Amino acid sequence: MRIAAAQFSLDAVPEPSLWHKRLHAIFQSAAQARADILVFPEDMSLPLLGIIARWLPRSPGPPDPSQTALALATLAPIAYDHWQRVMQDMARHFAIITVAGSGLTVRNQRLVNQALIISDQGHIMAEQPKMHLFAFEQDWGVTAGSLVNQTANSWSLYTVVCNDATYFETFRMLRHRGADLIAVPIADPEPHYSEHKARRGTWARVQETPVCGIVGAGTGSLFGFTLSGKAGIYLPAALTPDHTGIVAESSSAYGEGIVMADVDLDALHEYQKSQPKLPKGPWQHPF
Amino acid sequence: MPHAYFLDTALYEPLIPSDAWIMGRGCPDISAPWPLEQRGLFIEDDQQMFWIKDDTWRHEPMTNLPLLVEWHQQSVALMAESHLQFPEISRYFAHHGAMLFLVVGEAPRADYRSGLWREVQQNQVVALTWWPHPGLLVPCEMDPTTTGFIPAVSSHVQWEWSQVFEVRERYPLWQRRRPDLYRTHWWIAP
Image (cartoon, rainbow over all chains, first blue to last red; front, side, top):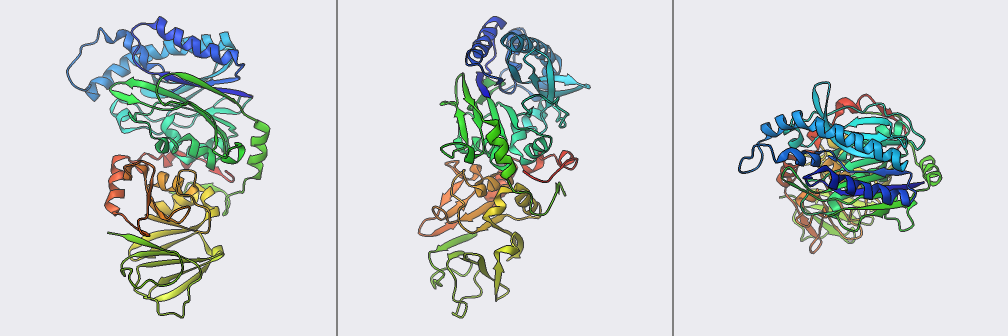
């Protein structure tokens, strides 16, 4: 199967048509290469707030977290709905299973950072809220979600969000549910990209839990944070010819682009079968 | 300040301060007059390790690993390389207070491709390692180069526990775990 992962700038957009064009170009590249799956970054809906930002009151200095929280609770769902609609349309138009990245919206009266899997017919297949939040997200009023039952799809594709991949337990839980492919939309607030810091996420997780990890990475800046990150496709090191575990990865952690690669799921399944079981039997979190 | 020396043989080096951790390679002559007050000693001999505790020689076959030992008021996780493919083991030890990981046997590399490096990062601990160069694995935030590896200089490396606590405070991985979620799942294989 062929997988594509997008690197996309999250700079605020002044008007939607430019954003649509950039998205369209990414989809078109993936479709021309006959990609089966396309993965976008975290916080994909938030740049759309730039359209209304010019009418919002401004104050000098960094934004006050309580004001940001209030603004997000009110405005983020509007941007989310638009983003979701556009992503569904494009997934259907280009007939690609799409992990649309994530967006902030309100569910059960709580603000959540939620990733979407959209079928190649444009239907929502899974909505997965972020489970492990950064401190600044809590300041913004975002609440952490649970692992939901993601609709089974033909590729055993699941998604989690960014910091969820810092914790091995996330990948273990998904693998136990049958995941072969785990898409991880990210938007790392690291102004200076560090390869080693980046390797603590999805790359490290797939070395421990044998699945294919697909990272869509946000770049640019968002609410005062400078972002860096590389889109990438990762496998256990033993399944890559050069033993790096890197199947494909952007050459730069800044700017936009798309990476693509073919992944041999049969080889992955064979490798999964060869892995030893836990030495002391079933693991259930003891603390 | 905790510090460690790496010995190329299991021979006793009389110039090493008695408060240092020592990692040695090779089988020790346990009949030799070793300074039993030494703070720590790990000697490898293929499938066995030797160490000193309470002024007496201890001998552990690899099959007894993994182990969590209390040693000079410090919890130390002793593991074989094969244990590194199970992050559950490291997590368990970190939960029980291990701040220093030691892996007996070949293979852990002094870079991000090693399982030991991953365990150091996700549990925010330190680890002494031999391969391919002797040094200390630390959380990336504790190392100005962000590689998470501080090479030994003249076979010597030192660190401050307060640096580890500072990293944990600035980048609170542990507090942001979700045990409430993890407890609702179980698994057998990776």
